[in-house]
Length: 391
Image (cartoon, rainbow, N blue to C red):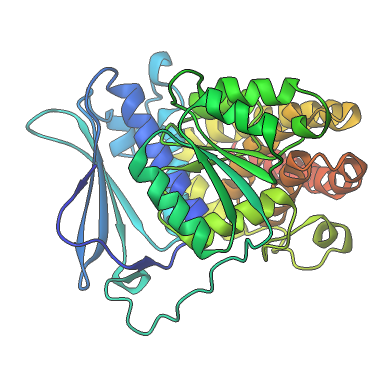
């Protein structure tokens, strides 16, 4: 990670969308340049906006990705890479950013350049009302983190929000603290000496009783897909990426996981039909298909139908069995697909179902899933109709 010049004070873009864009670009770079450095470079100015460049040392982007007019399909070994980048293009458009792809003439590696316009970037902080920190008073929080700098940053943030914090430096100390005291939530680093964060979460989930139901959130720099799957499989309720940059987002995430009001949609919004996004943004779907091109659209729609059918079948079983791991893993997939397709209401309901599963609200699973499933069926019908048109 390289920062050239000053960092902006604030970005007026949805964090979850920007996280998906950067995560996809970095993940793509790691896949196509295995074992080699991937550089993320940030630069910009009040006049030009913020530029984020992800560069790898792989073989570079193939011609069909750089030029959508090329109709030759990708070779089997790279099939799907262009589709993922088409989705990133669509996500970039959602935040009014532009994404350009090229190959470095010196190294041959791929370079993805995301530019967030100046209107979305605040470099000075002038005129921006300070956000009121989330109120964590009354919460007892266990922080398991071995790095002293990170310990200090987390303690200062949590103190500012009124939490009572106990900090330990390794996994064994975390288990000892959990045996002595009760906490409302545990914030667990993944890489720790003596016992890893994954082992801590596995031990807590096996403990039985109230301890096994305690909310656990992983704090880690390892946020790629394989890492996320391993973390959730170990029993995490959520993941917060390091470094923790926003105290407000950090605090509201904690409130959400302990079941306190955070200003975000909840199960009652889904059941009442209030406070939800529009059902479908057709313009977003059309832009995505246009970016993919004719051949790419055909493959993209085929894959989306296959994935959505699999998600629905797995959620049918997961909700019927009240399987928290299955519901959480499938809603993560659904959030990504529905958001890219423009199914905003479905995406929001999937987030709510995911949170309900994290909170073990078993009595609400079927109620929340019913309207979600109907929107999922409608999205499948829409995509299948588009398949006929695309041919």
